[in-house]
Image (cartoon, rainbow over all chains, first blue to last red; front, side):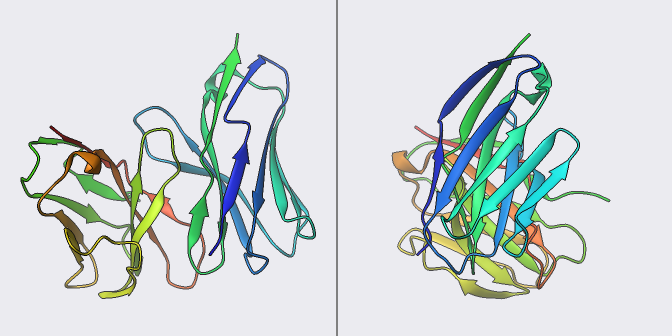
Length: 109
Length: 113
């Protein structure tokens, strides 16, 4: 089955800096890769996703890149703000969704 | 549009007691998922429904866990009897049939004492 690894597990940046979170997956048939943001005690919320026929997608300060050959994808957040502080999960989907273990991002004001 | 609704939000029980969680998906979403989220981990799929049919329950511990979605809308996840290791957040999610995007509920945080 699919195995998704995510790193780093924690990330601390200064406000205004960029943050990058990386994930690798094992199932070459996976074709959908979402990123979720989860604030403490709240539901995971989709922030951006990408499909296997696209290499990069951007939405304002957030971008995701996908390298199918290497089976890895990354989340890029630019001009970070304190409200970006949360746990971020990557996932990969073939038949079912498999999630990474999460990255706790802290943005220091 | 209302999101996925779950209740209760919190539940504290003693081990060996039964417990049930309820989920109401987004209106029109045929596909419903139950996930388990342990502290500091990502969600792990327990069971997936397409309408009222459980199409993937391979990760559901069937000795103590059961689920149902009788009319293809609301769903209930039950644990009987609960064990200490069942303490976790139980998340429900839904999606439109044939689409990939899953929308999560707020979860039920279960504590087993």
